[in-house]
Length: 273
Image (spheres, rainbow, N blue to C red):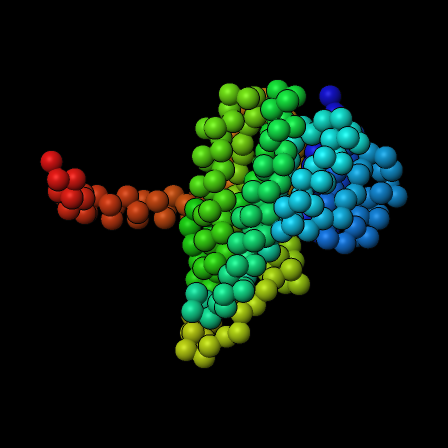
């Protein structure tokens, strides 16, 4: 059976790649973008199967209106993929108030508005699947991406909680956690803070760690995993994309557990009884 998929941030990268993969197999797609001219090629190829909607996810009313338009057009929304987002590169101290607020506005609040807008539709129809595009950086962190890391940690906590709240309505929640991929996420889509000279060694170390091309996956190779996730009868809460994420997460969590255990006596004494 074909599905109706609502994808935010479909103008480029993962969003556009996945939108076309769904269309190719016969699904219907609501594709949102700030500039819908970027979707013209998909419209020309797939006609009425795609509904392009101009949308800035930071505008809550516009998000609710887009979901209402999609529901009226196709009659159902089986899957929401919250893909809209961008990377903010810069150390914590370098980040301005506006840069930090803008990062959370898109990566967290934009995702929240789309989630809230689609939930009544899915509750009414008795089924649905909300897929949040998080990151391995919502599990572990890298320097020079502190505010981005924080936004994805927020998405993780929000979505894990949401999964427990809506399971009874027949709605599944999944977090996609990619490691690095060769998209333009770190290029034209990214925002750079104004650098401070004192942090140049940190930036140099970060760039050196990114020099191995093998750590970056091929974006198009993710389509099969995403199709399987959307089709799964019992989808996982979390799904890594790429071969780097899981080994790194294991290493990070082993270190965390070892540290917690080394302070276990202090922690237990703090309970007071």
